Image (cartoon, rainbow, N blue to C red; front, side, top):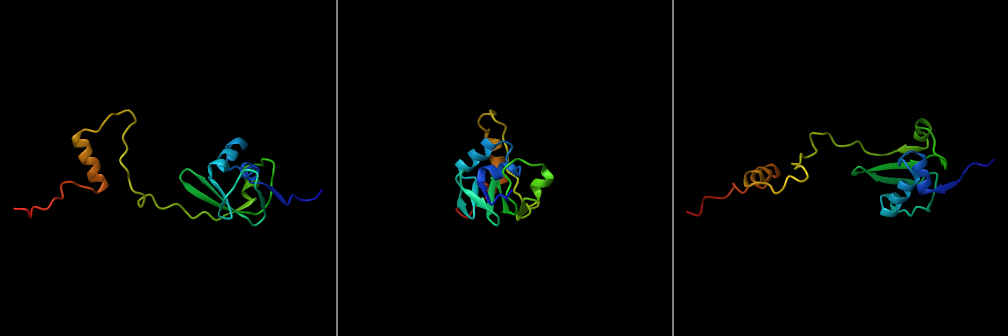
Length: 133
């Protein structure tokens, strides 16, 4: 039995547990969330050992270099051996800007709430020069 040299990108991304189902992996390829060597990947595109695969999920890119080709879904321990993770560490929580969040269906903000939101965003309307006198 000879080793597998290439595989479909959607199959490989699913096999190494980046997506829960194969159809989710295919949909991600179709939506442009998967890139191979910097180019958007169609789901049937083949990948080989040494290719760089970028998977966009949860708002950030996961960068992997293919180390081993698998076509069937494997356990988490084996899946981790199939790629080299080159993803940079996420920024510290202090650096991530806090954005004000309103609950869905809460309606329009009141004037007071709007001013508080503008103050949090740093666009105060209160910082008007009094040099017009």
